[in-house]
Structures are given as structure tokens and as C-alpha cells.
Image (cartoon, rainbow, N blue to C red; front, side, top):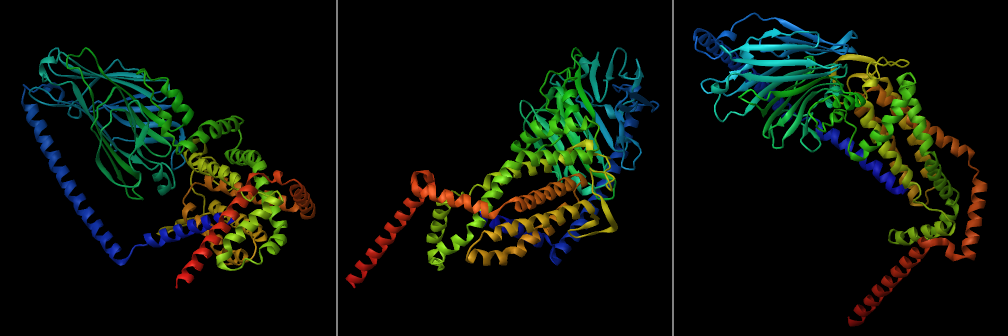
Length: 632
């Protein structure tokens, strides 16, 4: 076990170092990157020119339609642009009469990146939602139309675009008690204006997602275009790559434009048809935006106007419990799994977070405790739960430590490289005779590792930590710099995080305790190998610094506290363990096992069988060699 642990740490360090070296750009790669940037700038310029041409063409088209009194929506192609506001205690939405769509969403009760009240998810320049229907003589695009508001209250409004006598396109909005908005679209008296094959409506949805947190890189990791497949789970586009027009073959229940702690989400009552097109385009650091999302979707449309096209929209925080309760407000009778917007990790880690961490976290936060105290208490609780296993692991190592002189004596004749098998067998035989299991330390490590990884997924997604201060930490959801500079440095970034430094220091202390414990129980050449590999173990905290310097202070603080208490537990166990009494207990075990070999269990029997098998193989090899020499 100890050898495997060392090899595992070495492999991890080698991978991290190799990865850093591998990713260091060469001169050719830098030149290629510069060429790529120049190409992107040229393409961007070309796209802007084409966009301007398209805008001019659209304006000319609208002008021609306005001059054409036979156009279907002649009366709605001109008008006065004004705003309509829907609001409740949690959300404020601004709708524009031009296009009849939402142009601004403000989530109340949360601080923005500047520390001011309320978070603006998007404004008019960031958001576009257009509905398009194929007509018999001309296509309809709601973005071109002016709507007339009516039946307006704080939570409801009806937007109507006139298309001639007895013909209209009507949008109805109804805001719920918090973050859910119900929407319906109905065409009245327009049955003869649509093709006989028209039964769907297209949604073009675009949004530039704002940077809402201080740490651009860290927030970007958790900002994804996420979608829910019908009768299945959720999936998302890669958060690090630029993805253009990815086709989704499955039918979808909803699509969400998500950043770390807030989301805009659209649910279709009659599903979004297969072959949806989704795009995710990362934005430059310093632009104030994380990604530009695009979704081209199709859902059911009734040209006769008997059944409306219904959607539900969510604009709000990514809060696990809140999202589960919001789902109950939906009138579409679907299993939406909106809580999956809070990513809790792969299945095993999601189970730990879903059925343990969340309940503990909710219970502690309900007491009104500071979030830093909550993280400390969670750490202590986890340490208390795993303490029996940690103690068992330590005592196994302590037993091997006090047996070291006997192991040295029993294996000193096996110093040659070809004798390593006999050496291992002699060691295992001695362990069995003294009632020691060198494998007993594996299980505690295997149990604690999923908890570490589960917390790695839970803490960055816990919106309760957002804006919460503790000691010197101003915001537990982002990094806590002790020094910042305006220029990005490779591997380090533009700051030094104090909690990351503390985490790495605690990791170094814990590694020192671990190395000391392992060194005390190794024999012969193992101890020499340990000295050679020791420096590799001490490099691990340095590798972690380069990885975690940009991570949230809450996560680094949790790991710091966890490692600090792990080191403290090891120190306390070492101080309270009496080696003489432990050796006396092992000597009693040895005598009992010698008097009653059956008590040694199956391990000794297997070792004896292995030894006999090896001896038989050796005898056959020697016999074969003698025959060969006889032939010669």
C-alpha cells in the first residue's frame, strides 16, 4: 500500500509537471497564435461589415413593406418604442413594445460585481429573442413588429401586433411569485395566411452572458449552455471551447444560458424539436462578458389559433432547493430537473453531495452561522465520521513501524534484485504472524477521496457563499488576493490568493507527516528509495498552488482546514501511541498465532501456497537447466 501510494503521488506530480511543460507554447505556436488572432480580427471585421449590410437590407425591406399597404403586418411595422415593466419581490423584467420581448432582467436580493444591490442578468444590447413563422406569402418575424400593450398589471401584460381587420398576433406574459414567467403566443384570424404545412414556430435566442463575479477564469469554468433532454438527463456544451451551431438530435424540454450563479432558462410545453442548433462563444477577459450563447429552437405552433404556443421562462439564481421548488410552479407536468443547473459532480459525488452535503449545509446555514464557520463545522463533522477509519489506518502503520527491526532481521538475506519476491513473501508472512494487515490503510483513503472530490464540486456551486465574508476573506465564492497586478503571468495569473497559500502550506505539513510515517516503517532499499522520492512529494503543494490560485477562497479554505485537522489528528495519534505497549500486544498475537495457526486466517494460507508454487516453479526451472546441460 505504501509503495503504491508513493508511486501514485509521483505519477500525479509527473502528470502535472508534464502537462505544464507540454502546454508551454513554443515560438511556432506563439506565431501561430498571433496569426490566429489576426485572422479572428479580420473575420470579426468582415462579420461586422456583413452585419451592417444585413441591417441596411433589413431596413430597406421594412421600408418597402411599410410602403406596401398590402403587407400582412402593415399596421405594426411602425410605432413608438416603449417599455413595460413586470415585477415582484424577487425579479424585475423590462419588456419592449418593439418585438414584444424581454430586454432586461434584474434579480433582486443579490449584490452585483460592484457590490451594489441587485444583479442585472442582461440588458437590451445583450439579449435577443425572436419568433419566426413561415407564412403563405411572407414570413413573420416578431423582431420587426411593434406591439401594443394592454391588460397591464405589475405581473401581467398582453402584447398585440395587428395584422389587419380581425387578424392579430398576441403574446401574453404572466409573472409568478418569484422567478418564473409564463408566456403564450397565439395567432388569431390568420389561418389563411399560413401554409398548409405550417405547424411549428422557430425561436432565435441570443444572449451575451455577463461576468457577475470577480474571478473571470473561475466563473467561466462554471458557465455553460445547458439543456435537458426529454425523458432523460441534462447535458451541456463544452465550457472551454468555441462551439458553433452544434446540432442536438434529441428532443429537448428546456435550454438554459447559465453562468456560475445565475441562469436564463426557457421551457417548452410541447418540447423543442430535435435538430436544435446551439452555440457557445467565449468572450475576451476584460470585456465584461463570459460567453455569447445562441440557440435556434423549434416548437409547436397552431396556425388556427385554437391552442397557444406556451413557454415558461426562468430568470434567477442557481440555488438547488429553490430550483426544485420552482419546478413545482410549472404547469407543463414535466420532470424538468432544473436543479441540475447546480452541478454536483459525477454520479458518485453527486450522490454524496445530494444526500449528505446538502442536508448538512442547509442545517448549519439555517442556524444563521457565518459561512466560514459552516465550512469549518462541515470539516469537523467529516473528520469525526472518518476518524475511526483514519485511526485504524494509522494504527496499521504504527504496527508496521514497531515491527520494523524484526522485518529488517527477517529480510536481510534478500537484498539481491532477484530476491524481491521472497522478500515480499517474508514480510507478508511476518505481518500475518503478528496479526498486522498492511492493506488496512487503503480503505480510509478510498473513503475520504470521494468526499474531497465531492466538496470540490459542491463549494464552487454553493450560491450561499456568494458575497459572504469571513475573517480577511471578503467573498468566499471567489479568490482572496493579498496582492494583485494588472498583467497575467503564465501559470500564476494576476494575483496571489492567501487561502491558496495556506492550503498549500497545510498540504506541505500533511505531506511531511505522511512521509515521516512511511519512512519509519520501511526497510532496506525501500528507505533509500524513499529518500530519493521525498522531494517529489514536497513538490505536490507547489503544483496545487498553480492549479488552485484562481479557485474560490471557500474551496481553498475548506481544503486548508481539512488538511490542518488531518495533520493535527496524525500528530495527536503519534503522541498518544505507546510503541512499547503496541509491540507487547503484537508479541501476544504472535504467540497465539504460533500456538493456533488457524487463527492466522486465509492470508497466511495463501502466502504459504504462493511460496510452495514458487518453489515448485524454481525446481522445474532447475530441472530443465540440468536436462539442457546433459544434452550438451
